[in-house]
Amino acid sequence: MSQKAYDIVIVGAGAAGCVVASYLAVHTDASIALIEAGDTDRDPFIHIPAGFAKILAHDRHVWKYETVPQHGTKRAYRSGKVLGGGSSINAMCYVRGQVRDYAAWQDAVGDTGKWSYEDLLPVFMAQEDNDTFHDEYHGIDGGLAVQLPKGINELNQYCLKAFQEYGLPYNPDYNGKSQVGVSPVQSTVGNQRRCSAVDAYLRSHLASGRITLLTGKTVARILVENKRAVGVELMDNGLETIMAGEVALSAGTVIARRSLCTRASGRPSSCASTVSR
Image (cartoon, rainbow, N blue to C red; front, side, top):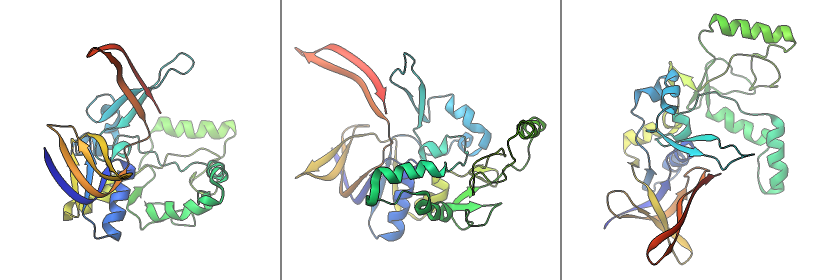
């Protein structure tokens, strides 16, 4: 059994894991290990904006989940299994959501958190490097590239006109004052390349060696001593233990149960496989 040690171990190098790792690298002197079950993001189809359809059609960079049946129907649910997680495989649409969505979050937590739109707007602005808008709703100094399409084909132009003829107003910025209306989609693309959480937050820290990235590593369990997480156990290519002063769990929101079996006399007697979230 091999064993390593770091001050902080982060389980999951998806969008959230990249942000957490970057924050810790900037604000602490801790040694940091970032663990990802999938591969690095070297696949060129990740970085070509139109390549996301090809990525989603194959198994290499996705967890191919299916939901528990809803009204008798299972739904495909694809989650990123690659450095950058969903931000490396999604369609790059930049849509913040409506003000009332955040109001519901704030109502749910009360005075214990700051989840209102007004609280989160400065965070969005700090993240953003927008190539079109620079106003009270958008920033230009962040790491996340956001842009409007550089060219709109004729079919999309007709669609925009048709919606307006139907009665929807043209809205030049649905991430601004109001989401009502029709407009081209803002996207997390910069210089004609996808801008994932890796590009926005992590890449420079990997290049400097500030963060140690461990890919192709599946965490089997978190090690706990005296009710405190002290490390993780990996199950790839033999048992490997990584000890840590702190463990940050950022492995996604999907709860999966695979081949759940009850055993009698050493043999599986009944098995079930379900996925839920």
